[in-house]
Image 1 (cartoon, rainbow, N blue to C red):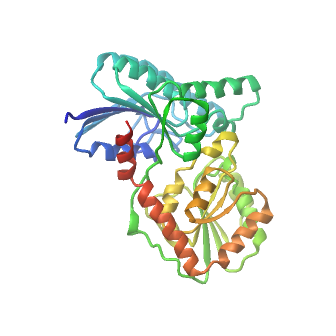
Image 2: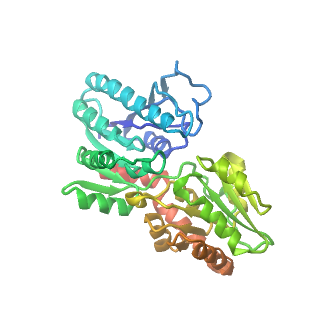
Image 3: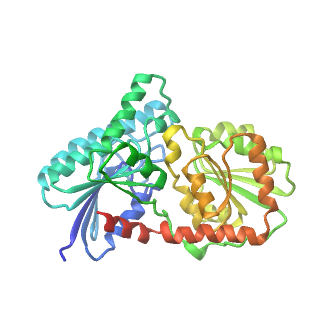
Length: 398
């Protein structure tokens, strides 16, 4: 059997904390893969500047065994402002379009498959499709975000005409590929209802860092119960509802950890200064591991606009892997997943009374019930979220 060459187009890549890096690392380890080339940007995600070791002068090319990473010049996303977001999105689209056209012309018939990782800006799917035609390669899009809903929650869109244009552009983009991968079953069903005669496969995002049983997974009851939210602190996450409901529940010997960064972090951390609420900021490595280890329940919340409810946030993989019961505030796909896997408690109403009740119900769970939820989550992770399982499914689908 001849070995295969793959091309990956993505706005983000390692050392940025995105799952496409984990996916690629596993892909290059396969014996039937000859080479994987990644076209991406200079790393800057969540850093508000280029990562250490990178600047406008590069490095632009990295090679390691069967992996080649080509980085393109961009304006880094220097803040959460509209200008910063637009600057990064637009410069990546321009850089990638110009570069990949010439790259494709010089490498025609050298790649079997081009996969485009369609995180924001989602329209890189168009660039990937054009490149695949020049390369004479099959193509796929791995849908990670939905526009205009995603940018409505970050920068806002008031113009109805502009919103409709953005909506139709992404819908049409899905037609411009041989295969669509979706990161939730609900999203796959939605796209299938809009686009007929298109091969659509659910491909869950793999876990970014696969530590498995290295973590403390005990659910033994302790004097102080710790609830932990870990992730982005923005408009779509209902952080204030989580806090207000926690305070309203008036539980004894409880603590709420809030870990992460985002547009609302500064304002909310200044507003809610309580002894039983700890603001950790952005954590990684051992610091993050300690929070997971000490948590009794993990909190996930999404109040997404429209079709964003079809998206499953990537942190659910980490939550499932860490073998803890999950408290979820969502009426979308992620809530359905937790409910169907019996991995925790779900509240699909966005009000203090119902979310407060969920906190109280969590404390009523027996050790056996908590262990069962934890095991259900971990078993689903083993079957669906490991990088080996994800890459296997990808290779079997193309």
